[in-house]
Image 1 (spheres, rainbow, N blue to C red):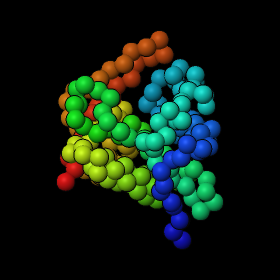
Image 2 (cartoon, one colour):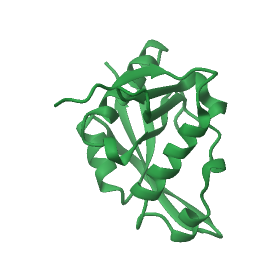
Image 3 (cartoon, rainbow, N blue to C red):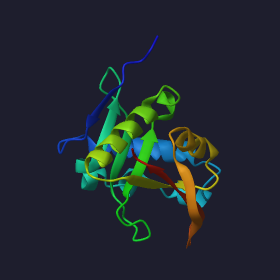
Length: 167
């Protein structure tokens, strides 16, 4: 039986604690073995501030109105990608993956960015996160440029940029 998923804009009165819990759950699941364990171990619900970006966030919820996915987007934050839109984050509860929730959220965010005048959109993805890379490729994104490496006391992370041209 198909699950009913609703995609809607985030509101100012959203349950941001539920969004932070979703971020924590997805990070601990998706990035296990991909990010330094020290980094994952120090994460908690206060690591994120989803309320800071509520105007540029879409929510996916199930029939019980439980938040099961979040996608944040907006203008590119990197000077390397002037005039681009950016997908800041896309996180789906592991229990609700592989049912189209991520595709629905991403398509809606891309449509909003296109309506906002963006012709190209990029995102950063961990260079070794093959499930995410394959998902984005399936959605039409292509790898561009050289990877970026972030070194901190918690370890090293390496990401690559992917882009899609909107028609």
